[in-house]
Picture (cartoon, rainbow, N blue to C red):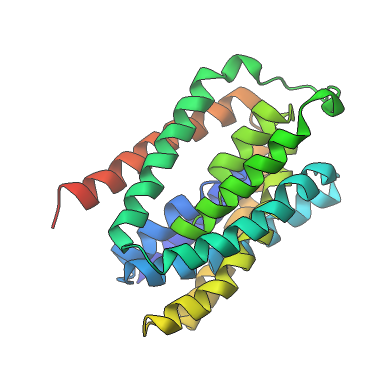
Length: 255
């Protein structure tokens, strides 16, 4: 179980450092280290990542590194989409959910690599961007959040940076509160989904994992403030490719 707690710390570091990646670690840690069943791990991940994201969001909010218009345009449709995605999750297999999860991670990483020239460490005039695209993206990402149990930061951050024109550090703070909103929406629906499948969550695991992860997110925030926009972005993309490949391998080539 000690490895699970180390994993919880890494989840928090990831969220505090990059505003994303928490669920990418949480789901594998819960399945491969804590021994949770796939659908249970996906449900628990939403509650854990929601709590950690909310804790990690506080320092960004205090420093006014949050773009509230994006929170509304992305977060509210995302909550509705997540609720719907959680309903769909009751009708598909856990293996399908994890394979879809891994595929989306790899796609997001490729997009981040291809569009790195568009990312600028400037405040810019955000109002000139097509915000209706952010709203549609929020709904779509929300559905994926509920379906595969991820907070969606690995899609939210690229959307805010590439579509919204936000600098990386502002996108991270904004992403954290959006992740919390969507994760809690899906988490509460998953309580009913698991009950219908005769499954239940390990609430003590969720609580301890969340507390350790929250500490890690605060540490990650301090580390991230000393890194450049481009180094954060490139490290983020490399991380997605590695973890996505690992999950595909574990589900496609192992028993």
